[in-house]
Image (cartoon, rainbow, N blue to C red; front, side):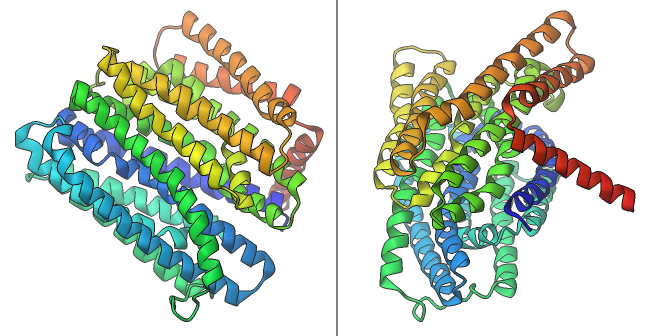
Length: 511
């Protein structure tokens, strides 16, 4: 099976997973908001908000194991794959212990003046915090198994596990809705059980199906490999933890100045943007092994072409959801939530814009990681990740409104972060800046303008409602597809698409 076919097939599995999990997760959030109430939901988001970021932390840290495993997979040396797995497992256990230490140190200042929580709910907030620690450990130690599945491109089983986890979260939401005990405490405890189940399933499956999954850290100890993976994982962890700190820190700063109700709006915005991001990143998850293997085979030109193509299509997939949601956010939130929190509509719209910006260099970052030379990249990217906390605090201190938190996020995390990625890709991967501008930014920005205009025309001419939402979605989607087909798809991409369609038609007729 060719790499292009594998990417399309695996992306298909991930889209099915996403379609089910998004629907289930959105409904779960509605039930949880109803069960906890706006105040307790805000407490959970400010105290346990890092749980939502742990998915990103898990994905980012898996890059190290996946990179080294993909190299070993290409060489076909079983002993080397076993060494990679054991070294990676040892390092991630160490990272989990370090994370516990960080949370333990942060415990006292957080609950003694930083967090703005009603005294009667401090006890419940502390239990949420402890559940976060348990979830962190399980998520981090699951990284090697996640990376093994990615290296083997086993997206079918990965998708099945994701769907199972989504339904477990739905079950927790129903339990909390009808429970008579303290619902915030119950929700925190049950939410920490789900990653335990996920970890157990992944562990059993990988040990039964992949020969390299043998836990013998002493027997497969390799000092040179420890040094290589530790160095890569360390710098990789720096960018991941800085992103995690910003995700959690922004919520704490918002809470300090405006209280828990604004954290509810912020949490809902992250839910919306997270699903929009996941929709686009299905392609990245399927494409990552291809980019890394091209780097391993020293095919740098093909690696850069795959990264640019991935950036273009991931951005388009992001626009597919983000643009109609941007215009129809009041209607969507009104249908989804019984009561729409103040500032939620604006926060959701701004968060979608931030997601679109991040998509335009997402695969280019994978190319940089594939080189293994990430020390200075990690330092500069981490600085860009952390600066929004400082400048958000300054903005609020100067009397800025809640929406000011997105100004530093746009400037530093979004545009600044992308600049760092592209700069190091040009330096380390021989990426042509002109190719990046022509193959990624030019088609994305021009298509965005056309889609925004299409949405503006529909929303100006029709009253809000289901019909306008459908027409707006159809108009923006059609605009994107026509723009891509007429201007921004290469001849090879068009031929590959038509070949795939014809193949499916012949298969259907044969049945």
